[in-house]
Length: 417
Image 1: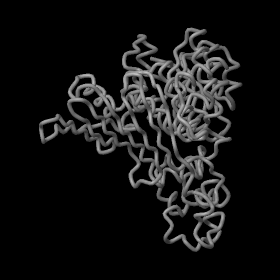
Image 2 (image 1 turned 45 degrees about the horizontal axis):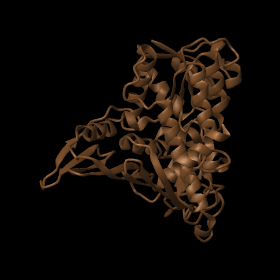
Image 3 (image 1 turned 135 degrees about the horizontal axis):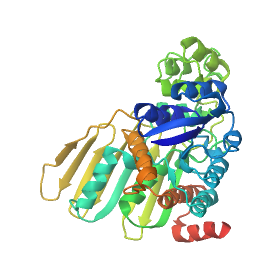
């Protein structure tokens, strides 16, 4: 059994990795926690039976102690990953680091080097590789059923409500406080494209903007906050009380530690989640496309957009002998063979864990990696860095309005390191 400490008892720390430990006590046990929010720290400690001596208010405190577990899970906000990860690796912890691993390309490469220098294992939370959906697609590709893979069209359908919650009102709304949305939301989608391509990227281009969730689109008379007498409350899809009083717990938790209706309403009066979505301080994009060319001549296009009903991923992979079409949340895959009209249809069934079972899969893989050193089919720290660099290159392309030579870009980043 792996013993672990947690830095950052938020939605992922509690709801994904902590929840796995509670359901799989023979695999992993959390024995220490650090979080500045006393309620969340106490709640996590109560769940996992962590004694007072191993409850801390900051990563500095918990990492000032001699190493007392096997692994360290770092689930802080995006811009707060590097220092605790560096310190934990240097103390001898193997590290599970929530994505994105860092908010600059130089820091991503830096953490990879620190892990290698200290001979420690570093896994990034690229959970999509561990879903039954994407694992099955990879197996089909490897089987040769659709021949040589030539083109991928991949969509991340963020959905209107998820965009509003996380990227207009939430922690990832503002570049200075978090990171570009293509990194924060989609670095593991780019990881999937890199994984499927089995090749190195050549060129990257990207376009996108913040087009809708801004003041110019505010309805007439809409106040800064939903509870300040909004005349559109009955018709607005984003009216905060309507959204959060009926939301699942993972959406309520960032709003208020106390998830009662009264506590939620009180938090919406002053907190960020009560702001009008057209009067927030968000500056990340609400839609973006990325085009990729790989060394093996495969091409890929990725679309991330807020303007969908569903919150899911859809994909089409086109090869020389056929194509694959998939819908992640419906857990449906179709395989078309050229010359045959009817496709082969696969209906999947995922475990009841987040990200269509990916949260379970990546935790099992991390435990296996630490216990027996089995790194089979796992996203390595090297490939995770590559996926992050793709996101940074895409953002550079979007901002500068030009195609990025990926090899040259990587050389320039490495020179800075």
